[in-house]
Length: 131
Image 1 (cartoon, rainbow, N blue to C red):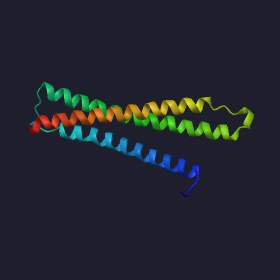
Image 2: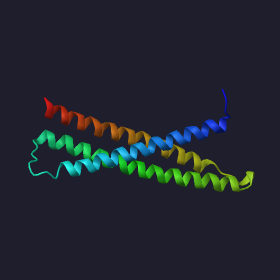
Image 3: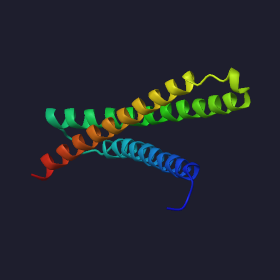
Image 4: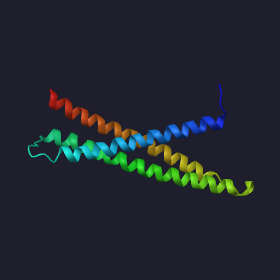
């Protein structure tokens, strides 16, 4: 297989950044669609509809917020790594980087979970309206 380990790390990072961008776009767009859909004049919902749409909206907003926080953590992590690489080897401290990596992973997993819950709530709502 061609390419070095550094190449694969770069490709993995690029793929992760693209996925994060898609998640952020998806949740932001879905939130916007809710506001457009709910501004109609003949909008009426029963209690279950309100619960499903409320859960979906809250989860899409949560996904957006989690992705933005994850972007900030990632930026801080890269700044920290650059700072450590500039320091002499004996003065480098990688413990903070490990914490950033753990926090980022938790945020990513949580954002995926919130996006899945939001999508499931919308699907349940739509299935109720179609059936």
